Length: 259
Image 1 (cartoon, rainbow, N blue to C red):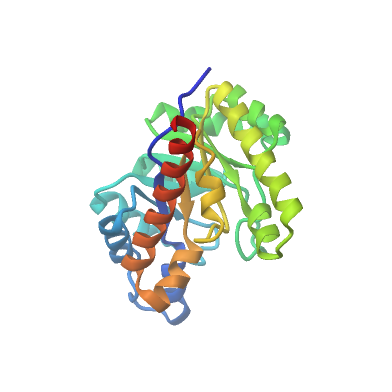
Image 2: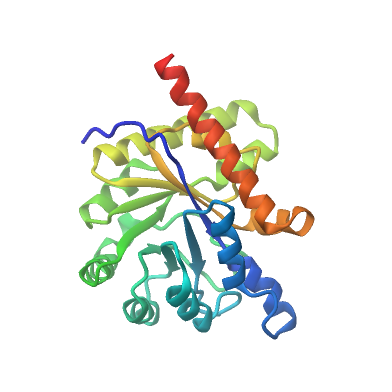
């Protein structure tokens, strides 16, 4: 399958950590739904929310209100468990992204092992697709993981960019380029396998351009950084700036190819 470069890169804003702040004290403030509306007004194309088994941030009520009131697609991040499958089927989000989850981790650490878990994951993919949700797999930029996702008939792979962002933060220039090449190769392979390609984890204003320049990637999902920046500049400004950084990087690489 050959896919033409995409001139537009979608931005999905993850609002999990608005709920983290709320839950630190209890009550209803700050409200993740309000954050979602602000993000959309600032240029987000969709909203991502991860309902964890331990409910450390997003709650069941958050998911209900997001699905009822959002004006853009909801991407429901979920572990492959019976509980989460039932919630997804009840709410019918636009997309479900299957992610690994361990109680002791601070955030999602690494990609889903689709190769090892194929037999178990197959039913989740099938049941979610049967009710009309697009199914994404959050994976490392690895050919075997991509091939396994394609065999399960997932719609999307979301490539984990965490290692690249860590290397960039450490100013490991040579290693950064190796990781960018690895992500690029994986994205191209995923397209050839018939999968739509997203990316996310750890992305900042500084690290987004190199990923946005991979023009077969059609969506980035960004959360923690934007919520952190919102403390200093406001959420609308943070999302608006990220939207501009993404757009500039994508337009620049396409202009170079056509110029």
